[in-house]
Image 1 (spheres, protein in one colour):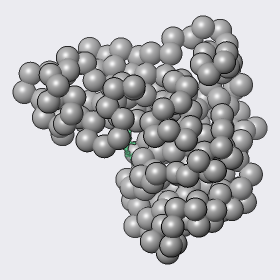
Image 2 (spheres, protein in one colour):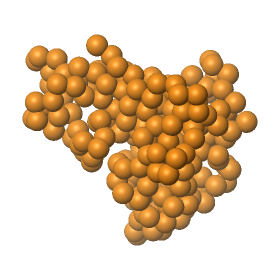
Image 3 (cartoon, helix red, strand yellow):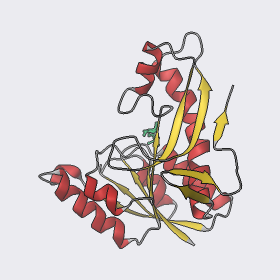
Image 4 (cartoon, protein in one colour):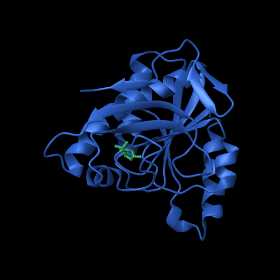
Amino acid sequence: MKRLVILISGRGSNMEAIVKACAAEGWPATVAAVISNRPDAGGLQFAAERGIATAVVDHKAYANREDFDAELARVIDGFAPDLVVLAGFMRILTPGFTARYARRMLNIHPSLLPAFTGLHTHERALEMGCKVAGATVHFVTAELDHGAIVMQGVVPVKPGDDAKSLAARVLTVEHRIYPQAVRWFAEDALIWTGECVAHRDGAAQQLLLS
Ligand code: GRF
């Protein structure tokens, strides 16, 4: 049984999708804890209601990133996770922290990486006239929004889209590809070749929605 610790900063809809899929599909995994850097993160309530341990490590209480990351790692490690799942966790992590969880920490980013790392991905995709958009689940490295890609979900950009409508469409694929990627990790189905990761049996690592 793999132990998952999920980190959130806000509403936690990706966390919710993972918790529900894990329970409904009977993964060989358990969500050991949900941790937030914000005491008011909406997702904490959902986790608590499901009987999942919750914790808050408020970044505002720490003088610098190193001190915050050290305390965050201490709290995470208290739950002995096999995998750390960043789900809308809005903090830049120090290289020491990312090295500690190398190949056992996933993130979801709302763009088709390597395009549009960082913030405001949907606005930037629209400004560029992109015809498709999407989301990427990747292993976390020291470089922001880089690291081996586990799965990508693609949606069309439609006439009349604004950042809000595009974000909503992308979120629907996020809720499908993130549980899938975490499940593969839990099942030991991800095989590394150098810096790339692939599904053991060649399962499609992309989801295309029209
Ligand atoms: C998602 O769009 C995710 O890709 C990004 O932050 C958002 C978090 O949403 N990293 P939620 O908290 O999972 O609802």
